[in-house]
Length: 258
Image: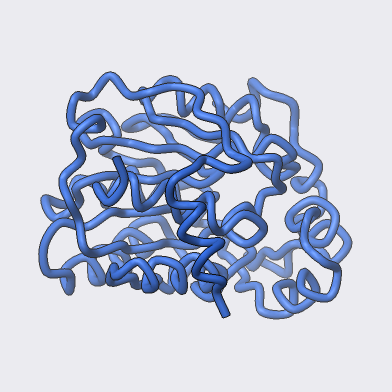
């Protein structure tokens, strides 16, 4: 159950989040008011990872839908988001966590998408080799915890608890580990053909204690896209450990906050 007084207070303050930069895109300062939010999950997860944020968005009166990313190939993943976007009526904020920043960057070209929100997410340029970009930063510890069974990959329990969900209670992290969706190797080789952040208002939540994607890489991508950026003292799963701040950022992207 959401404490309404606590959540209402979160809507008028950044709380633990600190504002870092503001996009040069004029639309970011005066965002289109959106009533829909589409949320996409990344690796080692499924759509339920957005549950805490969805509850808060619904409390604020928005229509929120989580995409069930198949984690097979990038085209398949983009198509899954496009199908959900097609069901939206009116302006929609597209939100991506982790790997799904690739999907947001590509599917965000959809004319229904009014703004993009990246949560500790990949944000490649069009045609960019994200793996090569990531290698210019220190390798995050979670990488060593990926195990493969043929072409199917997942995160080991030890790495999941320590490097993916490090700021969550152990019991909760173990539940999330149990429902993680495996991914296909082919997914990792995909490249975006568009970069929606070059034309759409963009927002970014950096996780400063991230052990899955380098925080400095996150800062680089956020700065490059001119995103309005917050920093959270969080693991890779800030959407679960800091749902109030993530929700507030989405509401701002949707034009529901000054």
